[in-house]
Image (tube, helix red, strand yellow):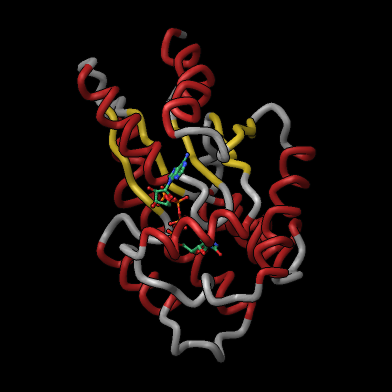
Length: 209
Ligand SMILES: Nc1ncnc2c1ncn2[C@@H]1O[C@H](COP(=O)(O)OP(=O)(O)OP(=O)(O)O)[C@@H](O)[C@H]1O
Ligand SMILES: Cc1cn([C@H]2C[C@H](O)[C@@H](COP(=O)(O)O)O2)c(=O)[nH]c1=O
C-alpha cells in the first residue's frame, strides 16, 4: 500500500509540536486531508499508558518496562488511529514514533538499538514512516526553551540528567547513519519560519508523487 506517513523526531523542546501544527494548518488550507497525532498518546488507551510512563512519581520504572509500555502505546495508536487514516488516504503527521524508542530506550537507557527494534517489530509489523524528520538541537537549549515557555508539564523524562538527553541526541545521530534514506535532519536552532521552510522542502516533493 502507498501511504504518506511522516514522523517528527528530536530531543525535548526541539520544536516538533510547533512545526506539526503549522504543517497541519498549511495542508488543510490547501484542502489536503492530513491529521496530526502524537506518541505516546493520540488515542485514549495510549494517553493512559503515557500518563503511567511519564508520571514523575514513577521513578522506580525499570528500563525494559518503559520500553515495552512505549511499544504497547505505539501498537494501540497505530491500529486505532494511524492505519485507519492511512487506509483512507489521509496524510499522517506523527510527533514521535519508533525512532524515539531507539534513541531514548535503545541508546540513552542502554538497552540496544537492535533489541528495541525487535520488540517494536512485533508492535508495528511493517508500518514504518515514509519519511522521518529529525530536529537537531543541543539538548540544553531545547530544555531551556521548555523551561522558558512554562506551559507544558514537566514529565519524568524531562527530569533525567543532561547527560541522558545528550545520549538521546547521540542516539539520533546513530539512526541518521543507519537509516539515511528514511531520516533527514533539519537544524532546529533556526527561526520557526526557516525550520518550517526546511521541513516543507523535504515533504513537498513526496506530495507531488
Ligand atoms: N525554532 C524555534 N525557535 C525558538 N523557539 C522555538 C522554536 N520552535 C519552537 N520553539 C519554542 O520552544 C518550545 C518547545 O517547542 P515544541 O513544544 O514545539 O517542542 P517539542 O519538540 O514538541 O518538545 P517536546 O518533544 O519536548 O514536547 C515552545 O515554547 C516553542 O514555542
Ligand atoms: C514515543 C517515545 C517517547 N519517549 C519520550 C520522549 C519524551 O521525553 C517523552 C514524550 O514527551 P513529548 O512531550 O511528547 O515529547 O517520551 C521515549 O522515551 N520513547 C518513545 O518511544
